[in-house]
Amino acid sequence: MAVTLPGIFFSSHFPPSSSRSRSKTFSSSSSSSCCSSASSSQMELNNEFGLTKFKEFPYLSAPHRNLMVDLVSTVENRLGSQLLPCSLPPDVQYYQNQSGSAHASLHTRSGNKPSHSQIDFILGSWIHCTLPTGGALNITSLSAFLNPLTDAPNFLIELIQSSPTSLILILDLPPRKDLVLCPDYLHTFYEETQLEMRKQILEKIPEVKPYTSSSLYIRSLVSPTAIMVRIETEASQPGRVEEIIKDHVDPIAKEVLGIWLDQCACGKREVGDTERAILEKRDGLIKIKTIEVDIGSNFPRLFGPEVADRVLGAIRDVFTV
Image 1 (tube, rainbow, N blue to C red):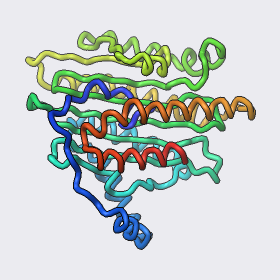
Image 2 (image 1 turned 45 degrees about the vertical axis):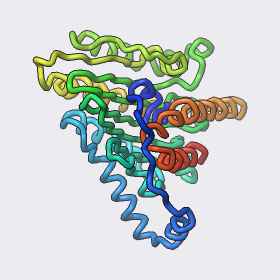
Image 3 (image 1 turned 90 degrees about the horizontal axis):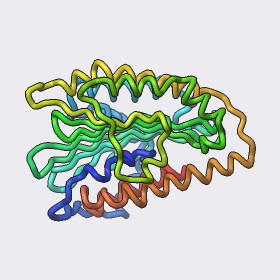
């Protein structure tokens, strides 16, 4: 969730459900009691299980999996002590619907405020959903959000694969200021970094075409240099999508992440009190919109109301930390 949780871009890609899956009922009082009595060592084991499950990316091809693992590891290794451990409960770090047709994993780490970190939180996720046609939909995403101590852009990557021959890629540094009113911001983060060049390199590949989201809201959030493309290959070329991921998407995604880490997450910018309040309000509105419009409408349909409520509640907690 720009937010991507698992991405603001996935709403039109989930198949309609013929019937709603219902999750098993859990006793909230029993769950609360277990949480309150859990030892710190058990919590560490749970977190390790959740991270391991998340980083497995079990339904992806090797190039796709390697890309996501490398991106997540790079963010966590580079930011290090700026991030707090994941605090999500185990049944939010990994969850599925009752029928077993949909599986998902969620990983979040909030910024360490006492260290004066500029990180609000990072959020990674994957979703695997069996399609009525017999195929599968796989969505993987990684988002990183900065707090109002800086006005630098956030980071977003999402890959949506609906078949072995079709993949949508969204890669961007979503701006947190009006680019018309702030030409220096446009120059610093989008012109000097040559993000447009990377977009053009991908679009020169014959199988790569521009992708336009049907949502005006989503299109209003991304930058002018956002990479939003659809990769379509012939059925007679098995493995071509994986080849494009390995040879083209992987290096470009890592370059864009490197730019974000160097100039946004670890760069220092002066932000006054008035501007800080505006940033906080803007960031908050995006988070609310993401939950209400996108995630809130899709999760109950895919995972059933109880699982959806549990996951959405955990996400709201992360968004409001």
